[in-house]
Image 1: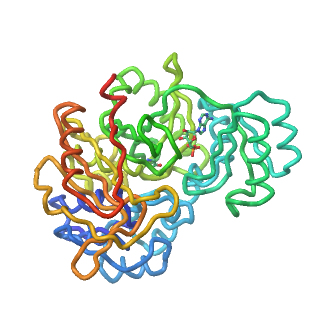
Image 2 (image 1 turned 90 degrees about the vertical axis):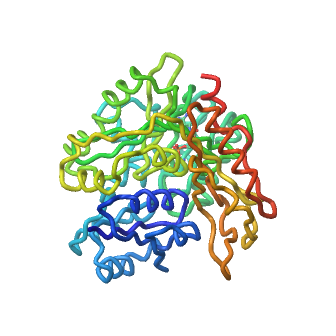
Image 3 (image 1 turned 60 degrees about the vertical axis):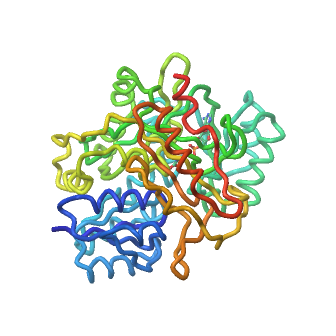
Length: 426
Ligand code: AMP
Ligand code: GLY
């Protein structure tokens, strides 16, 4: 029997812990630091250790005889947590710092994509503001300006006129608004089309695609308003038909994992490609993430019928190619309930009511920004819950999810009313 440690405290980590604890091979799951949802999950226990406290996490893995660690968020991966666990002789599912640069440095990724002829927007990197300004003057708008490093999804500015583009250069390179992440600026061509997420498990040159999914990053209905970490997601994404799936594997995913192996940094872990599909159906890479998506994890794992612990172990021991993942044929759709003010400032500590009212087997309420306080569950973040439901159709999953959302309440609770709208129209 295995003991597993999940690192992180979001909805993704609740879903990972929930699914790992369902494995017949797993006797106990620890989550560091976890949230109220993981603490209430049978067979799951929270450990009060922050996701960036690598020494503390290694110590906990040793003390609790952990056999497998699964890392949720990008920051510890980019900082090299997997290298540190390996040095301590501990099995850790996630990429080492080398390949995690795919998320940690946009200029690294763009140069890598060019070296391996993987389609992406034309680009250039700058450290000198004057050179960046000169480039902007010589190019048509819109242009996309990105802080090179990790900026929690906030370091991307789409400039529709020269004034905005020049202001973005000042924000990123001169005022250093994104700190160290903004020491370098990437300016790239604006791509039009439909954005999709494509998530795989990779182990060297072996790679298996997970079920397709689509998230909704914009805060408001109709995909308007400010960008967020994700207001909801569903799986499968009907937009990704068999032909597009094959093209993405052939033109993007295989060349990426093979390129990393050739460059001496084989990838192990979840690999998430953010792609733009143009009107002719050509995929281009917008970004890579070195981890599972949040909230995509929630609907994807709700559909996964295979054993996630066995999948991680197959990847770690080079047996991924023969691993077949079984999926529930139904749709899964997750609605993120957020605190008032998100993605700006929001209050914490509001008591959540109605969690017990949700009793359907087709619904799972994954917690994100929650904590337990005197036996009650209170809000503790911007994205608070992801209410996820299965249904025979997108519409059925959507109805079930929203009916469960209607049972839950706290002061200022809010959500998008239209998660899944594109799939309903497809
Ligand atoms: P990134 O973190 O690089 O994925 O950028 C965040 C978001 O900005 C993406 O999810 C896209 O919606 C948008 N974006 C990034 N790069 C481009 C581009 N070259 N063209 C159009 N939109 C982009
Ligand atoms: N849902 C977007 C992300 O995880 O980056």
